[in-house]
Image (tube, rainbow over all chains, first blue to last red; front, side, top):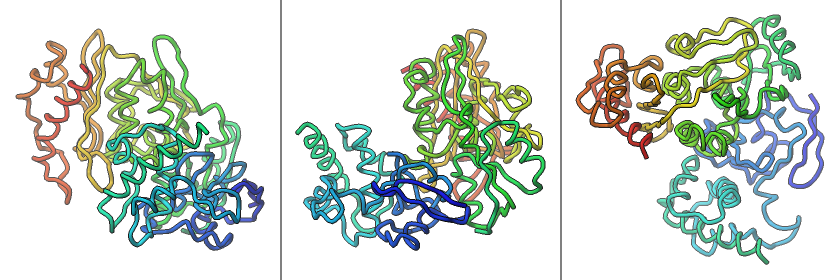
Amino acid sequence: MQISFTLNGRPTTVDVEPATLVAELLREQFNLTGTHIGCDTSQCGACVVHLDGLPVKSCTLLAPALDGATLLTIEGLQGAPGSNRLHPMQEAFREHHGLQCGFCTPGMLMTAVALATEKPALTEADVRRGLEGNICRCTGYQNIVVSVISGAAAMNAAKGE
Amino acid sequence: MKPFAYHQPTQIPDAAKLLTSIEDSKLVAGGMTLIPTLKQRLASPVALIDLSRLGSLKGITDDGATITIGAMTPHAVVAGSKLVQARIPGLAALASMIGDPAVRSRGTIGGSVANNDPAADYPAGVLGLGATIVTSTREIAADKFFLGLFETALEPGEIITAIRFPLPLKAGYAKFKAPASRYALVGVFVAKFADGVRVAVTGAGAGVFRVPPMEAALSQHFDPSAIAAIKIDTDGLTSDIHAEADYRAHLVTVMAKRAVDAALS
């Protein structure tokens, strides 16, 4: 079947088998390998992308759901294509060492940005609860939580500029 | 995942017709249970009938004495609804505790209720509030809808279109989460109405069930102390790697007390 959607700002049309998972489509057809497949059982959150602005697990999303929708992946998070400017949440993860191996980081960032967009003034409890669907096996979460709080504040400040 | 045909009907009768006419077809709402099931090849339907284009299944309406939530309304929308937060805050709280944010973006109330997972949250809210399940053909009282392990009163070809909730005087939900899955190890929904109290338990047995002794005690005195001494029989409760039946029985009383606390706060 043919589906049309907006992928990181660009109108896209593609033929897919209905049984294609969005995570597979992104990685194998579009070479957007920033979306990681960790568990492939909807537990780990490494594959989180934004579908019409909402965080979703792309390993648990069938490609037909993209038709007519707007999809944002980690590759589309930073500024204009080709720009080296990181998103404020990415900056915060770098600043606060919110990653070690980095495997979970794309999903963490996508979930964190959605969380900060929904509620700008995040508490530590909000962040820990909001990250329940994202698993990191390196950091113990402390630096991730600090990064998200700081990144959310930076996003909020940038909005006011 | 095995290949399947994909249908996206825009009218409820068309969806019902597809479901009846294609043998081994399945409905897909948010897909939060179905897609993992397909990936593990625990199911291999020849066709999926996607309900997302049925616009009339989405949204929350204020009917005065009741609130109607469309079957395709995602958990995050129920959790964030000002109307649900104002009229049945316990139900908004329940929706906010399901899964994780990504699951709440996609998972729907109709899908959860139709699937009737023994550890799902919504069945407790629906049974606890004595809601009505509205389908493509009829209306079913919650007391007659949940029939046990993944089993409901739905007939082949019948599609849930909405759930209609009466407004309680007070209501609350408390659950002890299985830490990895965030499903309810035990979850208890308590609702106080002018004519009595309803208590519904999920996670503890093969399906959601009510607890008449707690309902009677809370109808007399709506306070956690009223049920502190009520023990649940372990007969029929689940024992698995997560918890033994006697532990679940213990948790029912603890969660029921917390649900009453939540309702009173």
